[in-house]
Image (cartoon, rainbow, N blue to C red; front, side, top):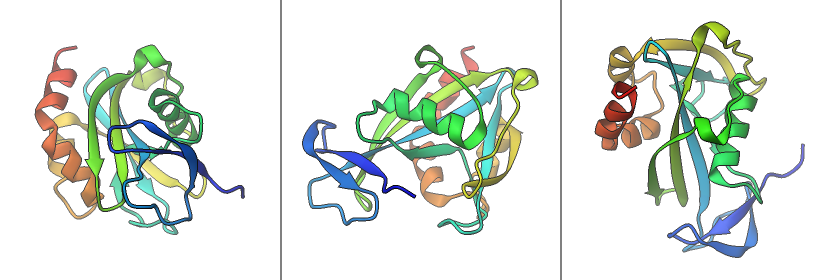
Length: 173
């Protein structure tokens, strides 16, 4: 498998002009961009996927996420990650930006998006070695489920900080 290469960014999201490799330590003051995509149905159900048993946070549930690759914009990375992990295809215009969040423990800048999907016309195709199961949860049940130990805790933290923004985006449709 090829090494995953990222663009290196500063805290403000400006490219620093050099590459960062997934399997190498990240230098002080250097960040990479990670995207999170909440796929929401016309009935306000949130798609969550279960992590593979061989991945960190094994068998925990989460929304689609992943690092953007060298040369990608956050939007391009979000579109690619959603397709890779779930088989769902969307366009730039389908992405609703929710927040940008700096995570210092693993120097990352999270860019979060919501996409609205038609559940009846969507066939989920899970990515081998990444995801093993999926489910749709009504938004209010999702907000309760993420508080359990079955959900990835650091994803929960970001959601809770931005919950009012999610409420607005999801309920204004």
